[in-house]
Image 1 (cartoon, helix red, strand yellow):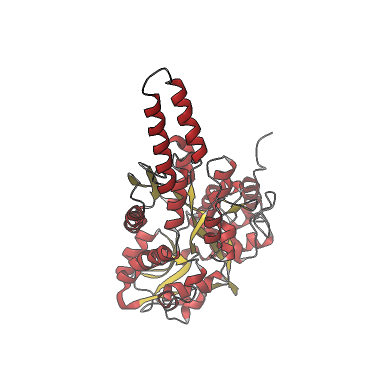
Image 2 (cartoon, one colour; image 1 turned 90 degrees about the vertical axis):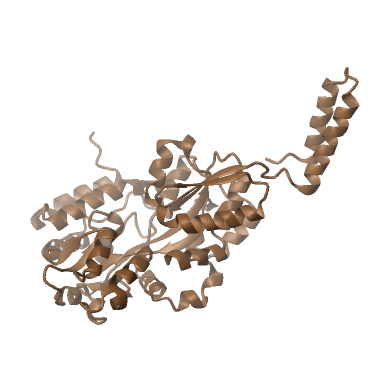
Length: 420
């Protein structure tokens, strides 16, 4: 906390009193008072000599470096800001593994917020100016950075899934339905439809599409997960019955297959857009997710947040940096660099965003998206769900075993499957 003028003056007087037996006492007092006055008037002690560390993903490094350099130009008293790579989806795990080595400013998907706040790792945002700036974003983005109505995150971008497709293989009309995609002709050895079946961020789509809920309607009921309902059984039955037309792959493999014209369509996110555009050349297509079995495919809706470490040595400067990284100008810079959709209300009518086919697809899918819960129990969801859906895709679970297996999955997610 910054010391007031009075506090600095008192400290100087105490120092003088201790040294009163010395003939230099008056000189010491005068020097101390002069220093305190100068610091108060110019504010030059704020952040002087500060060093900070920021975590960001490898894909964000270039744009974050530019933002950090611009920030330091406005804060000449800062000594240094180091950028370290920590992929967003592993931030919580990395933080918990060695809290003392964690960065001052971190970027997280908003579902990690609850656990990090509960563990006391994040600093609450209380500055009126910072809160006012945060409130200039969309209401869902603001809420995504809150736990128990207290603000811990500066919202940066909105993300959900979208469909990428090769228009020389899948027509715009066929891309509207998964059945249309599967019925399209693909080159020999090609794949109709791909997604990452080993990542629950994507495979939760199947459950949501068939009406299942994760932690209740508002995502805050720790005891509610109905993946074992009739809807969950129907979702996994569809997946098992049609898995022969699907391909399990990550974004890097999808880029290679699109470049070879051996992939019809793929579920990814706006961060994939640039690589897929290059791979497909003039055949690039993107849209909201296709319908499945007559149902609009649902997806997770997530927000990226910048947060400040509760143990940051220069908390005020770290807060200013987090606010800077999420300003409207830097949200737009992130969109231009990585197609990450801004959440600032001031950019709602920005021409660059409005004409982007990627942004249009994300916004269209946003009306069919489920806001990702941010309660700490989300940590129970990821691995068990990913393992389950991958087993279904690989044929390791039979349809007649789904009711019992899904009951086990729901219990794991709710944390009620512990041995007595």
